[in-house]
Structures are given as C-alpha cells and as structure tokens.
Amino acid sequence: MAKRIFIIEYAKGSDKGFDGFRPDTKPILQAIEEASSYKTEIVFYKPNKKYELLDYLKENAHSVISRINPGNLKEVDEYFQFLKALSNYGVIVHTHPDVMINLDFKDILAKLKDTELGDKQTEFYHTYSEFVTKFPALLKEYGIRVLKTNYGSTGEGVYLVRLKEDGSIVSTEAVNNDKYYYENIQEFLTNFEKKFEEEGEYAAYFKGKVGFVNCRYLERISEGEIRVLLVNDKIISVVHKKPQDGEFSATLFSGAKYKYESPEAPKWKEVVALTTKGLKDLKPFLHGQNFPLLWTMDYILDYNEDKSDKYVLSEINCSCVGISTKLQYAQEVAKVFKKN
Ligand SMILES: Nc1ncnc2c1ncn2[C@@H]1O[C@H](COP(=O)(O)OP(=O)(O)O)[C@@H](O)[C@H]1O
Ligand SMILES: [Mg+2]
Picture: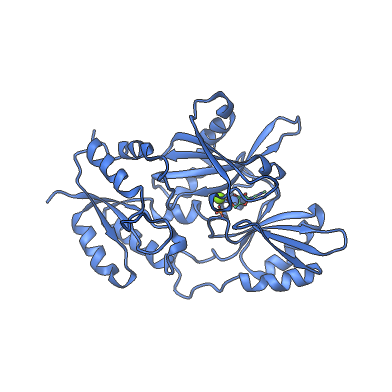
C-alpha cells in the first residue's frame, strides 16, 4: 500500500470533540486528501505501545503530523525521542522535535533577547539558586515582572509578580487570574522553590529545560495579544486576542476574545513585516529542519522611544496550534503536502 500521511493524537486532554478526536484532525486530513494524492490515517500515541506504533509508522507513513499538546503527556521527553526516531528513519515529522524543543519553550525569549523580536531584559533561570540570585534585583528595579515556566501553556505557570510599597508581594497566575499574597520577597522566594521541578534522569530533550523565564511586564497587554498564525514560513492570519477588561491574561479559557483578520490588513503591516524579518533570527534554532507546520508567534504591544508602536514577542506555539474554530485554514496546511 502507498505511504500515507498520519496525524498522531493522544487520548487524554480537554481538546477533543465528542468522537474523541481533536475537532480539527479530520478536516486537516480531508483537506490533505483533496489537495494531494495521499491517503491519510489517524493513530493514537500510547506510551506502553510506542514500539509497535513506531514499527507501524515506519512501514506506512510518508509524513506524520503530531497533534498532541505536550501538556497532556507525562512523558514528553520519551515522545520527542519517538518522533526523532521516526525522523531518523526517513519519515517526515511535523513538527520536528528539535524544532519544538527550541521554539515552543519559553527560554527562546531569552535566546532572542538581542534581536528585534525580543526584549533586552529577558532572563532564563535553570536553577532555583540562579532565580534567587537574579530575580529580586530586577523585581526591585521595575516593581513588576512576569515569570513564565519554561514549558507551560494556557497561562499555567505564568505569574505577574508585583512588589508593593510596603514590601509585600502579589502574584497573579495567568491561567485564571488567581492572586497569591506574600508578606515579603523572602516568603515569595521560599514558596517558589517547589516550582523548580527536578530534572529527569533520563532526559534527552529536556536537559537544561527546567526553569523560569523572567520577562518585562508589558502594560499594553490590556490592549490584547497579537497572534501571527503561520503555515511553515507563510503568514496566514493575524489574530487579535483581547483580555477581559482590567485583567492580565489573554488566554481563551480566562475569557479573552479572539478576532481573526487578514495579514493583508493595513493595521497589521508592521507586525507582519517584523515576523517575516524575524524568521531569519529563528532559523538557527531549526537545526536544519523546516519551520513548524502550523504555528504562532504571539506579540504584546509596547512603545518605541518616539512613542510609535513596538511589538515584543511573548511566546511561540508550535506543538499543537488549534484551528478548530477556523477550519478553512486546513486548506493552507494541506498545501504543504501537495505533490509538485
Ligand atoms: N510580558 C508580559 N507582560 C504582560 N502580560 C504578559 C506577558 N507575558 C505574558 N503575559 C500574559 O500571560 C498570558 C500567558 O502567557 P504566555 O506567554 O502566552 O504563556 P502560555 O499561553 O503558554 O501560558 C498571556 O496571554 C498574557 O495575557
Ligand atoms: Mg499564550
């Protein structure tokens, strides 16, 4: 039988339709069948059956599209090694795990800090001791900082930390805008220690990845986040995500509103140009692989010295960007599989 295009799903997670698949899985595969001569298939990754699945995919897959939110998987490192094994065998893997590990994790913000995409005052702390040594000085200087766990999503592990005049601290978690209060910096730091998980002994991919990124607080988050949606290196949409009035989180679950617009719209000219130009700064992190299949670059607005708008990259998502509410983008994804 001719080699096919596969989507790999995972049974657990809140991102499923009533039939147990992600709602965008079948539309993406259908679009691929229409645009190419490939047949398609869906498989589920089960950690205890990974070797069987590996053999099956080696034999039958031309390409695989991973549609698993790493947050739903306990053994992400193992899963990335599984994808790598497929790639080494010659199966095309969307998105290659080397690319996911580099772009999807928030430490990319520290790596890009001196590029036009980034912000100079971004730091990554791999250990609690680095955090304790460096974080208090920046918090004192700015009074407010954002801490992001290196591999979180949907606002989990993203904290807005505010130092009040009386020396007490309020920390707001973006996932639901929950607030935590501490009498002083010491109490806050002590409490934060447990958030630095231990590094897995057998980690191949996750070595050096545990930790937090410390970012400048961008107050124009009140105007929302600007999400540039891409298929490989092509920008297909700009999404304006606006938080609830007076709140900090622009995640969908916290009540933010999403508005999809054309990248041709004049008001998005700057962010589209910045993104296009910024792709060259991301290239070194692809390790020779392609840009992700379906991915986003999220920005928050700031001001340049002359008061004009400046876009600051606030995260990249490339492991499993959903298009369930915009299924027409499945056609853009399908074009990647078109045979010349
Ligand atoms: N530098 C920042 N300044 C202000 N708000 C921020 C900043 N970074 C993130 N946020 C807020 O926190 C939310 C979650 O952060 P984000 O980096 O998007 O992580 P994720 O979506 O992976 O959890 C964002 O949607 C935004 O509302
Ligand atoms: Mg986000």
